[in-house]
Length: 326
Ligand SMILES: NC(=O)c1ccc[n+]([C@@H]2O[C@H](COP(=O)([O-])OP(=O)(O)OC[C@H]3O[C@@H](n4cnc5c(N)ncnc54)[C@H](OP(=O)(O)O)[C@@H]3O)[C@@H](O)[C@H]2O)c1
Image (cartoon, rainbow, N blue to C red; front, side):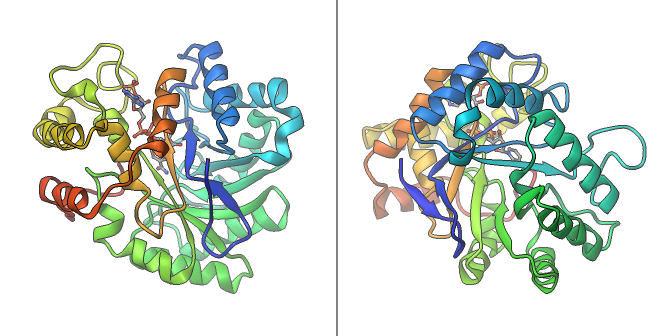
């Protein structure tokens, strides 16, 4: 595993990070989740990405990871970067969602309890809140750092204008935005088309991108059908059948392109997500140990040359149509 510097900070992150949005909830097989996490660490993945609401049910991914951390990783805590987030719907009532100081700080305390940790390494505002002043949301992030409950803070899915404002507010509060987390894949070039990647590079802020496989679309599985055990086939999955149908033509063309280079579409997709100089790490998901191993093996695939990159642009041109939700 190679480790890249997160912006101009002191923190190194692995090129591939592991996310717990799916496959670690109480609906999933706990022993398989445990094996995935252990194998990831053995292969050099030191960054585990969570959020308050991951599961299902919401909160259960943090509970399961908390148990695995306590039982299997207790002596490895200082070798790990654990991130969590708040800002999406989590609990009932007016304080269980969005970007108020109340929501963020209460949620962070809940996350720490579920994770059985005294602090997380990175705490994110999970999404911008159109109805809360940025100063309030950023003050909660600053408090998280100043209270020692988070070592660093980050922002996820903020559009460029709000991102710039938020970074400045944090700076004025004496806290640096360590990292920004957008969706980024061959099928979703939103942060590129919005100028966000260039801004992060200029400001020397790290960038950890998510869903490089577009939730599994950029694998061979959906070329002809929707397997019942896939994210699009499972009731609790976030990927919808119509998204698969809408992208199928592109996926087949990308599959043919990858095959012509002697590589798999998923290896091409992961390496593509890491090619931009602004990108520090790419957060993958894995439902099985075999999927995890396959994704990490992408790092050994041949580099994507200019010809392949141009052919990818022809099939999936940078466009503004996709958005921050993935
Ligand atoms: N900040 C945010 O708002 C936000 C939003 C979304 C995600 N994230 C983060 O990003 C992480 C990764 O997101 P993601 O799970 O969508 O990433 P992804 O890597 O694009 O998709 C992972 C899924 O692709 C399928 N897959 C993986 N390897 C495969 C292989 N070799 N062959 C066939 N299928 C394979 C599996 O789904 P199947 O079940 O179909 O097998 C797997 O769960 C999340 O866990 C979370 O930490 C953050």
